[in-house]
Image (tube, rainbow, N blue to C red; front, side, top):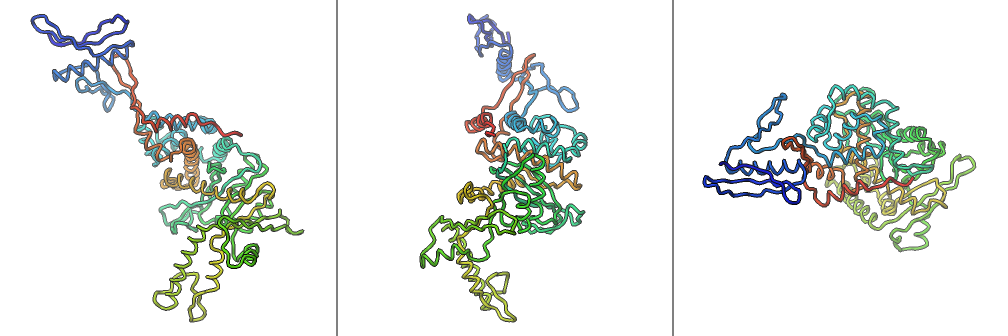
Length: 513
């Protein structure tokens, strides 16, 4: 008799699966495969037994079939169980969970297409058409391209974008006088023709193609609050006030404290901030050595300023100034001075070589041209050396509630918004390569903004970069196997670090409002 699989009940009530090997003399050799208590587990043990028989006999037909292309059934190799589904379950569930937790699902009107586009943008940034492939490979439901194109215009509407922004603001727990960080960047297009929106302008990357200017508003931790797109030739300093005013009006905030780099705030901007009744903390330009530093040097001749020393210089408002009192803080750092002086030494050496005719005259601030003669500008060199290591900050906040430590600490949080910009431009590939019309670009930026919020939440909760989280979690899939009439779930075992990251993500609480 040929070997066969049988099941028997055990004394414990379980079902044992065995392989029976018989010979012509009636002797039997029984190989025990295992015992199970559920029908699904029994079917799995029987499948293992059949595979073992197939390995010994070379022929076995489980009479199971898997769907093939075109919906036709295709026979599997002998002893093989069909996988009926395979998905990046841990990654997909984590991203969808954060999307729901941030209130983005509710804010988006439970639009499944918007949610899937956001998840696809995080898993593998690509075109809207290719996002279908990304979702299918992840085992997530994917809308048709026709459906995506039909829904995109809705994501560009102000009402939809404001609801998404409101969900992020609610998560951040903003209140009166909350710190908000503002910065801008540019996204270029591979075309040589402007259209009134995509226009050539100042580019930090020194590109000449048409571009758009992006203004990003975040909370003190870099969590995104609002994103706005402006014409590519619009000055950066002209983007801040409209964005902040729009955000405050949308969320009913009477006051916020704006934190921005010196390059973002012109004198007109500063006045507009004051006219709007807002508070600010900005980097201060230092054209000449401040009086308080000059006075300190006179009192301490020949001495070096102590590392970390902060000079305070009040600037009271005059009777006709129509502004609050301002306070300037100047901080000196040894390491900052060392780096600055090294740069000055290199530039002065190049200037001396250029003046001597050893090298061509190139752009160098220490080369002074007077008529046809060239010389090294020693006065400018002396001023630059006197300011080495000094960083300035100015605020209109009351020093009684915002001392030097608070102001300087708040300003240096700007690195958080720089991180958010890096995530959006690199990890999420925010540049709208495949979009040309204003409506389509705005819709694309809405998807990127929501993906940035999800990514920032994950980074804060896990301590991992979003790139590392996606790269790690996507490798571990959950599958379903058809064993006879039963469906069995299976999954790759997770490494400890991913298990801890997922646990941290589930246990992270909302910030106290």
